[in-house]
Length: 117
Image 1: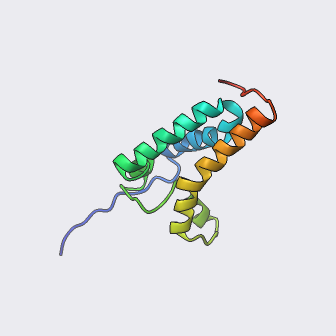
Image 2: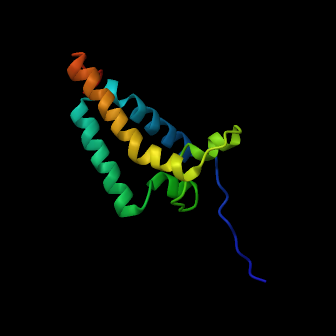
Image 3: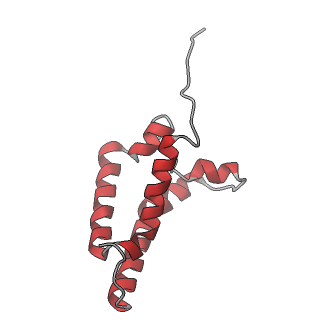
């Protein structure tokens, strides 16, 4: 019999808190940063996805998986039944453009300045 050890997932370790802070900044980015910076960040995000096959922090925290997003395991722990594939598509490919759209509307159409840059 083989002795295969599976990496223990630390759901609330250092990587979780670092990831949570980055996600919160991303979700607040339309109000914090110029829409141009938001757009550049999205480009870098897509480069990361294509070169690494997902999020670096997810790979560290969840044992190199490509199939889940950061929020998915936590939402499942709270009892939400979410299709992981559809959730991943929304988080990776739809939400970034929603955030960019909000930034453009907020800053250009409503003439509001970003709080930081």
